[in-house]
Amino acid sequence: MTTIRLTMAQALARFLASQKTIVGGQTVPIFGGVWAIFGHGNVAGIGEALYQHRDELPTFRAHNEQGMGHAAVAYAKASFRRRMMAVTSSIGPGATNMVTACALAHVNRLPVLFLPGDVFANRRPDPVLQQVEDFGDGTVSANDVFRPVSRYFDRITRPEQIIPALQRAMAVLTDPADCGPVTLSLCQDVQAEAYDYPEAFFDETIWTPRRVRPSEDELKVALAALSDAKKPLIIAGGGVLYSGATETLRALAEAHRIPVAETQAGKSSLPASHPLNMGSIGVTGTSAANQLAEEADVILAVGTRLQDFTTGSWALFQNDRKTIIGLNTQVFDATKHRALPLVADALAGLKEIALELGAHAAPAAWLKKAEDGRKAWFTAADKATAATNAALPSDGQVIGAVQRALGEHATVVCAAGGLPGELHKLWQAGAPGSYHLEYGYSTMGYEIAGGVGVKMAKPAEEVVVMVGDGSYLMMNSEIVTSVMLGLRLTIVVLDNAGYGCINRLQMATGGANFNNLLKDAKHAVLPAIDFAAHAASLGAIATKVASIAELEAGLAAAVKNDRTTVLVIDTDPLVTTEAGGHWWDVAVPEVSPRPQVNAARKAYEKAIQAQRVLD
Image (cartoon, rainbow, N blue to C red):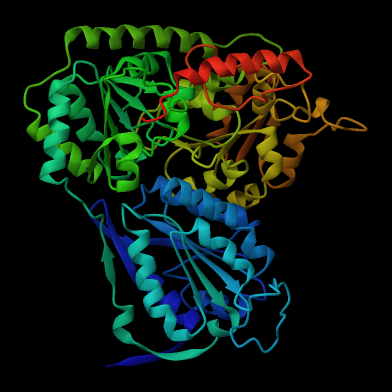
C-alpha cells in the first residue's frame, strides 16, 4: 500500500479537494470552498493546510462565524444540495458562534461540514485559552453543543481517525434521507500531527444523488388512494426542488388536474403563473390554497416535513375522511400524522405515480373551485402589492415594488419576521429556486449572509435580499464580505422601528405593546439609526428612499451598480396583508388581569377545537 505522510489537517484538506459531483453534465468539486475565521485553534493546523490547497479548494474570509455558516447553508440550498461548503473556526466563541447556523442546517436538512477547532487531545496545556471545563467530565468541550444539531458528530483525537470520519461525513452529507450538517471537532494538537495516509484515500470520488424508488406495496396503496380521490391536492415541499422534480410535478398535475400548493421550502416548484399553482399553503398561505386544503380528501405531501406553518398547527385539513400520502426519502417525515408512507426520492416517486395512475383526473367541479379561488386570490394580492402614496408603505407594497422592478426571475432571499409571511403569499416566483427563504428555523440574521451564499452558487443571477431593521441590526457584517468578494447584491432594508411581526402577534394574543417596537421598549432616548450611512460605511452603495416610486427607481439603478447596493425604506409596523392566512397555535395565558388577554384566551380555546390530535 502506497502512503503519503501528511498532517491530519493536510489530509482533510486534500480529501475535500478530491470529492466531486456532476452538475449539468459537468464534473465539478462538490465543495465550493471553505469559509474560515482563523484563531489559535485552527490557524496553525487547518489554516496551513488550506493554504496548500487554496487553488482547488478556495478559502473565503468572513466577518462573523455565524454569518459564514449561514452563507454555507444558503450555498447548499441554492445548489439544491448538489454542492456544499465547509466552515472552520477556532475553539471557544468562534466555534459556538456557529451552532445557530448548524441548527439551521439541521432543521432545513441541508449539507454543511462544520470544522471547529477543539482542545488539546494530549491535555498537557489544560486548560487552554477558551477551553470550557466540566468539573465532572474531562472529555467535554464547548463543541459538545454541536451534538444535538448535527446529523453526524465526531471528535478527532488521533490523526488516523480522520479517515473513517470523513468517509462517514460524506455519506451523511450526500444522503437524501439523512442529509444535514456534519461536525468534525478537530483537536488543535491533532491537526498538526502527521500520519502515513494511504494514497487511495485521496482518489477522486464522484457523488451523485441516490434515487430511492418506492416499494411496490406502498406505491400500490398510494395509487389506490389517489385513484379514488375526488378532491386531491399536492403539497410541494423542498424535496421537489432538491430532487429536480419540478417538471415531473408539473406533468403529473396537468395530466391529472391536481392543484398544487407550496410550502416555504417548496415555493417555486411551479411558476406562479401556472394555472394549477394555488400558491402558498398554511398559516402564511393564500386563500386559494387553504380553501382547497380544508376540503381535500387526498393530500399528496411531496418532500415536506409538514411543520405547523404548513398544516395550520394541524387545524387546516378539515375533511374527516382525508388521506395524507407522505412521499419522502425520510421515513420519519413520510409517516407523520398517520400518513400513508411512500418512501422514495421525489422525482422517482412522482414518475412512478404518473406511470401507474392512468387516465384518472380530478372532477371538473374541483378544478373549477381551484380556478375561481386562484382568480380571487390574485385580485387580493394585486391590491396588497399595489403602489400607493402612503406615508409609511406596507411590507406588501414594498414586495410589489421589488417584483415590478426586478421581475419574477430574480432570486429573493429572506428569513425571519413578518416578511416571510408576506413573501410566501405575495412573491410570484418564476424559475425553480428563485424563492429562497429560511423559515424552517426562522433565523434572524440569515438574510445578508444567506444572500452571499446564494450569489456564490448563482453568480450570474440577480439576487435581492429583503431584510427588516431588526434582522439587519443582528447581523450585517457580511455586507463587507459581499463587497470584498465582488458579489453584488441588492439589499432592501424595511425599517419599521422594531420587531413589528412579534409586536403584531403580541397584540393578537391580547398582550400590551411591550418591548418589541423601539418606542415600546425601555429607553432613555429613541435611537435615530441611519441604516444607509451604516451600510455605506461597510462599503456598499446606500440610499434611503422616501416612497415606493423612489424605491423602484433605486432598484432599477442597483442592477447597474458595480457592487452591493442597500436601499432603506421606512414601513408601517402594523399593516399586513389581510387576505389569506390561517390560524396558528400560539398559547394564550389561561388567566390574566388584562381583559384583552382573557378575550384572546376565549378565542384561542375555540380555535384549538379545530385541531386534529390524531392526524
